[in-house]
Image (cartoon, one colour):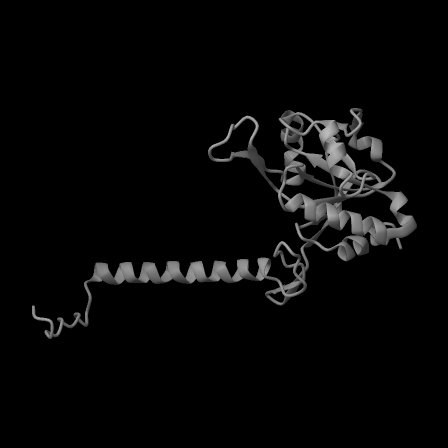
Length: 238
């Protein structure tokens, strides 16, 4: 064929197998596009963005505003657990009954999710004023190899030392994982010692428990402090 030759025109009636493949490909493309649209709506919500790039405004999905706040109604019972606090003392979830509890899971070497969440917790505590005495804020480390009480205590002083820090065995986290849809695993850092140098990939929602120790609200990562305050006030009847 020369450079100026006209390439052969495709047949107007493709083979039936070709038609089937084209239809399947078209269906897959439509499905991928639909999924992308939903994910885009969730993770690129209109509103103010944090410095980490996580949008914190509301999305409109099928005409319903989505704020990243899931109300658990009726409240759901969760298992009691006992971990070690930042002072090296055992602390059970049941010890906090009678107060609201806002908690999340992370680790002290977390580069982004945990620091930004703890900053929102600090702002929430300040905004609550006198109501802050009726709620406990809890940071639970799932880094079972490195995060000892002293490490957690020093870490929390950078944000708010009034936040409870807890650590414990993997078996405890596995036992309560279903209550909080908790997932976490170590991910090695290339070229380093996997026993000491690794990151921890973890779920990042916050959970609000009522005075009876029941789960009442789940907040996605990136929820602003004003939203946390509003929901806490509702639980306190304010």
